[in-house]
Length: 389
View 1 (tube, rainbow, N blue to C red):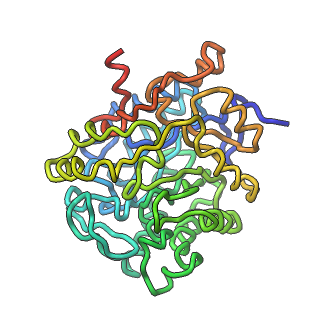
View 2: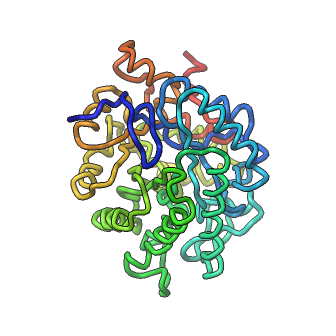
């Protein structure tokens, strides 16, 4: 029987009131790297608006793992604020997830005042510095930091831990053959390139057990030559399923470093992005903007066709992501065997969209896919269209 998108569902050990997930989108509301009232209110809006699970992004496991200095590093210093956030979400009846990750080459080392790490050394277009190849000691430390961050989030009351394995972040950089040129046990074959991601998932599961659900954001296709693509992306997901460390996969795509619009689709807000950047990057955006922010036409559920290959090959629960704005799309996803649907931009425009759909007041969202929300991550992620309508 096809599940009801608005009916209760289980995610590992966690009971959700429905199958709609607010996907992780960096909120831009932690200027001092701490939970703020503004961040709590941001998640309360979608929780009160009806989602079953809201995801806090982006929670770094180490200082050099932030994309920039304003992000939260999970630790004792941030525990109280994270607990306050989780408690507020629970009062609405929704559950809360924390997206746990290390930005790797997507980190701005200049902003963080800490060297960025990747599978292999490379120049950073974000900081105009070199990104360092992670050493064995780095990888052991990072794995330990994932476990420590997961444990802290569970102590704070988080229900779900989402391990970030996509978008050219650290674990993803090891998976991508074009970014991973190593000749040691971390490079070469897919099994070697997948070693770090699998190691992290195993270490977190061994520590957390069934105290929280553990999911991973993985790539259907990195969207650039040298990324994780095609059969390798599917083979990696198969490895994660065989390991048995995860309760679900969220299927994403694209690269924050190499091809961000592959994930977003729709209009490419080059002018708005350039205006939000510091001067050196702004000049580079004006010269290289069309190459970096490519145009991909928007269509509803644009990852569905690729995701169906994963659904056919895997038995574990899957979350469908990518341009989901309509109730009939959600119902189609349920009928196709996906256990959950994940929304992001649609909820920026209408935080109460789930309630509107469930009550029959609307059959779809009002998001116009202009992507002008993307540059607002630097001063508070929001839908700028609302202010002009």
